[in-house]
Length: 476
Image 1 (cartoon, rainbow, N blue to C red):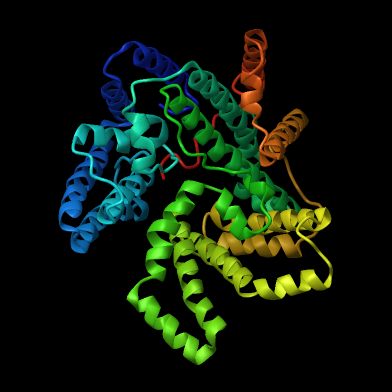
Image 2 (cartoon, one colour):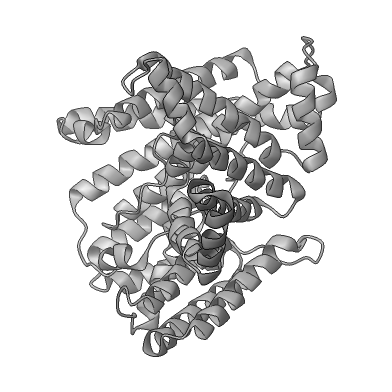
């Protein structure tokens, strides 16, 4: 039951109504979450139950004994299972691909590590804990929640009207990004990458730009829907995207893109790795040999590469994904190493942080660097990624065939992207558009919702030639 299926909307509507009238709210949410997961494929339950049981039991034991070995065992079981899923061709063996497995494994293992750190006390009720792991709006593609942040809301018995209205607007915005923009862009991207020989380097780059738009609107649109549905139950999930295409550096981009994965990597990989005895030893020795500043950046660079290589592998098992991690790790490491030099240049050129021209340059430069990285994640393998990269810089002819989209489709994408960028610009200035709408009269809100639904349906699923595309991160 994908978010874009009519059955999902009926399921959510029934759940929202039942949640309002039942006294057993968290119990109902757990039942609904299990039903939702079971409707995908009952066989996938095995993976989910293994994660729930091992992290619940392991977490309680870890809290009592503060055992690194037990933490290691729990992580080995769950990330071992995730590795098998990631690196095995399940279609070849007619096995079911678990829905959202990496999201609930990252979420539940953070719980175990936090218990080891004594951040909070363990949950004693395995059914309440099971709801934390399996809460249905976020189990598909996140966001990755922390137990101490979401648990008070999961077990809360109240949901107010503001949450309901706010959730509805978020859901509509998510469908707008997914159905009107992402699914259209996917057609062009698929045509170019499937028949790249018919397109010159210029149009391959155009397809990469469309893919960047597609993946953002697909992923953030799905998260908006998930967050909106959670709002219907009074649960506020973490914002997972913070206007990434307004970033001024690759580091800034990753602080804005899939923020819950980034913060997970920071808290459970980067910092723990940086403060190990091994890294302390490397840091000490490298400072003696290379100098204080250079020695400091050695361990920082190693930690950065490890994090982005893991992120690359999280995206997929091929060499192109490893190259994607290496690409981002290299750019971020170089930017850290040469930060002092860049600041000197800016001082010499009298460039201040308020300089709008320089800010625009930073945003455009970052976008181009992001686009180049997308060659690795969209290509079938490393060979195709490098071939298309070379083609982009070498083949400057004006050669293309049918993109699979009409002129109307291209105009719709253009105007829809302008709407998203317009909203993003206001959000960047901390203008809460949702609150402004909710502060209007009931008649205005009703008209706004009606117009939004009509636009989404007319330019989305009811549009001639519309092709449904599954969410990119649904089976991650």
